Image (cartoon, rainbow, N blue to C red):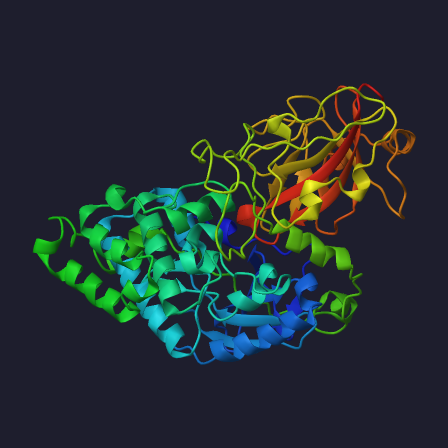
Length: 550
């Protein structure tokens, strides 16, 4: 946050110039719900305009939830919230505007300076708890409180995205009873489909405060099923927290929601700890208040001036809210996202677990501290799936290339339609690619690091497949992925333009041809794409490989 360019990015070619009369000055970021832009009110006050993603806007159920939650959010008034000032839930696409908060997110502040000092954490907890009081008083449970939803202004924290998290989360409208939230900051009752109450936000408040104090999630890193298992079944390790914080955070993390303090009680206890030397270390009061926030938030970026030039008629096509986008709706997308939520049967037995995410624990897994085995109907989570080509004798059942079979998901336990044997090809299915591993066309197929032929990379705007040496060409119009077809399509694919392939328009069943530097050719077919939650993005693929076939 030390420079304007880090905060405010120029509009790109595919960005609108205006949204319903709000002229856009810069791009602020993007997330699972949509893109966020800087604009100004008629009086010149900065606002953040969030424009909903087209695939969400196309869903009538999302529209209904979005409308209901926005109306509730209008009632929230609090010193530590970013007030909702305008919205159009029926727009094409829908959008909302909140007051712009000049400051980094807690995630960004911790990444830049490391863990926060004890007084700063206490001020953070008190401010966020006060924000939760205002949110709960409006009849809203945030459901997705996390460090990236807490902004650090110079005068204290601000909680954002309240009231729209249930409408915005893709999982909430793709599976009946699915759970809203970010896995690393969920409460146990969210993971097990229990009752969601204001106490759920208190649990997330404690996790957020622990992240601020430790510089990392309290329940550790790893993909969603591993972290959710710890949250539901293991006691949090609060011993790593500074002494003054342990009792309060431990109480907020009580497994029984009824045993957790209310936000008002959290505010009161934080004030006591800040005011009473005997309850804290000698240095606890030092730097508390505005001074500590100025140091943590860093220098405030200069907000760009309002855009004064009217949008020219020739650019009207780039102005949102007029014509609905034409998008092909496929029933496979809903099936894909539901399947993407399937939890590994042998890895997790969480009664009623509805935040279902595919997991794998083989040597190619993303985290070294994942449990080797978990309670369940099987002793080990390392099961294998293999598919043999009729023309190949190569085994594909190595644990590093396949995850355990997923409960309730036929697609995870049997080959996808595109995984049928291809003459001369080595067939591997399913293959799991996420941001911490990579994919190679030869063994070892799934390196733990990013050294393979193909990587999944999710930025603010999009997720894509990337490679330093391999090239990609998508198959269109139902064309089957064969060796001869791929040879023909890849013959002219050279240069950097073919080394990145956006997943924005990809759906289950999408196929592409790949050629690596060794001359191996492969057909990749997407079985499941989960990119709505960038923290847990992954692809389930089937892959036919012809070695040295170029």
